[in-house]
Amino acid sequence: MPHGHKHGHHHHVDPGAGDMRVALAVGVNLLLTVAQVVGGVLAGSLALIADALHNFSDAISLVIAFGARRIARRPSDEAMTFGYGRVEVVAALINYTTLIVIGVYLVYEAVMRFFEPEEVAGWTVVIIATIALAVDLITAALTFALSKESMNIRAAFLHNVADALGSVAVIVAGTLILLFDWRLIDPLATLLIAGYILWQAFAEIGGVIRILMLGSPPDIETGAVIRRMEAVEGVANVHHAHFWQMSEHDSALDAHLAIDSGAWGHADDIKARVKTMLSEEFGIGHSTLEMECSIHACKSPQRIGDDGHD
Image (cartoon, rainbow, N blue to C red):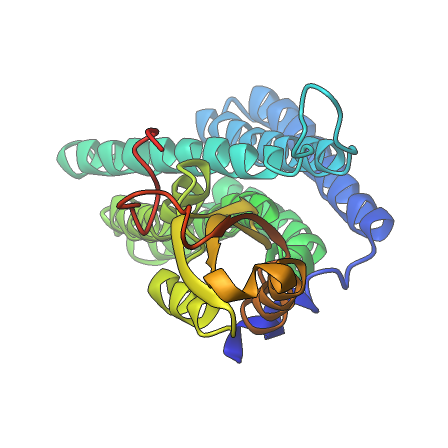
């Protein structure tokens, strides 16, 4: 089945090495922020200080991602019986939300600049943007492998990609201003970047919200899983099924399993077979199945979910 494949590969980056990479990325961004603020104050450049704030937001997004990554490894306790894995999803939601805010703000800034093109100090801007680009590329390189397996790191990674694009646009705009005094390129480039940031953030935030809303796993067709469970010998029907994602890579299901009236003696064996099938064919490792004899099963049950009245 196609569903089993993704469960083997999301642990390749050793947690300790991954933490080290994120910590390094945070350090590099904080150093750049300090350098840009100092440079901005000395050169009297507002653009530099603005860019410093942008890098600071990158560092913060990485700090949030890093913190969440650490907390997520805590074992379950009485307060959090499911463990702390979901904190990564919450961190991703925070980082995507701030990205959307940044994107909207950039659109506003760009539109205002179309009406009042500002004087841009070409050289200063190009040099600083080149340094910033180098830092963003280092950060992206440090977090790229992790971003493939974690929506939490992916959100912070996107902050950095957005920033790197910003630096590229500034270099291009600065160069064109130096060569041709073409000032409209600055807001134009800004609009393109803002569009990219918003497109990416909106594309990703849906999956994050789906997990927090206890939506069914996107790669699992709920009806097909239920039909497959009912095809197991001895199962009369399945009802009150709830599918959700405990975290990005852990799917869960709980359901009532009605056993054929003559097969009640084998109920435990039937349940074990259903659990094995769920794990092997659909990658659902966490399943809680309530057994009922089909004679005494819930009256007129709902197939998916329940109304709270058995």
